[in-house]
Length: 352
Ligand code: SAH
View 1: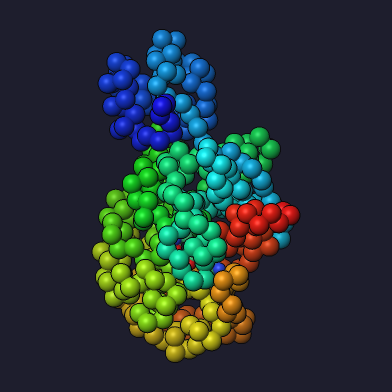
View 2: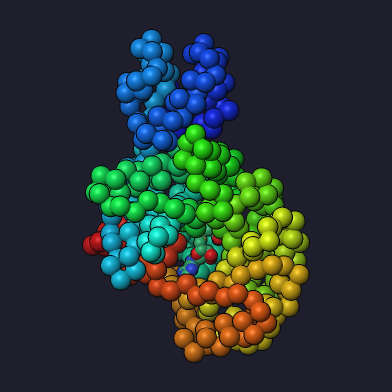
């Protein structure tokens, strides 16, 4: 079976070039540039590589990435939602959010998710199928970038967030390679502080990957006690809050950097002033920004999102304690922007 060139980082490609193709090491960089700088996905068009080498490449390698299957656009949010189809005919989703000069692509790293957080559509309503390959993660960027160019949409993707379907820390090998491609200047070359990984709180490898790349971290904390968090997020039984926060403490932050704490606002469940106080208390030793997220209702959890008034009170309290707070407004809600909700509407044959 042919191997997919989009699955390799530069080091691996260099080994392939030397050992499989008997070519000098610098060919790897050339291939990398064809793929990620010139968006050329046909080996025959690698014009600075000899015909015989291209033939050798063609016999052992191919270039495959997920294809855009459907797009929906929400004018109110200026957000596009892409449904992409993998080679084995599974669906993944990516969302592009345009906000002035900032164009953020939210990508998936799994088909489904094994974590089963109770408020999440991906974990509860979709089956966990498998981890995505590097070519499928970086392929979301390549495919959507191609779409923007083709449709003469001037904006360029400036930021990447791993907040689509799946848990990045449970696909750490492929996410690491994807980060190597995203940040390498001979490849996509996005600056490290424009990339954010969001985790439900897997400790294994967390501080290492953030420190290695110097990228940003968002943690889906959502609750302030182990009892409540374990109830909604079973992963908390394995990695309780105290251990998670100790791990986050190991992350080295620059002067202006902070950790983003994501906090879902669930009416009468975690949104009282007492919860806000407890939140301030448990985060006191960390440099954080808190992102309050109104709950986007799913079929499997029938709780309400907090009222606007309660959300404002919560935010006001946090700010009074000098914690920066942002509130995630409806971005993507109209186009079923909650994690996994777009793939679901496809599976349920709803009209887009
Ligand atoms: N597995 C990673 C990234 C995927 S989810 C993580 O858990 O962080 C991205 C964010 O959307 C997480 O903060 C997640 O908790 C949140 N989310 C999931 N379901 C949601 C819903 N129904 N409404 C609002 N936010 C939701």
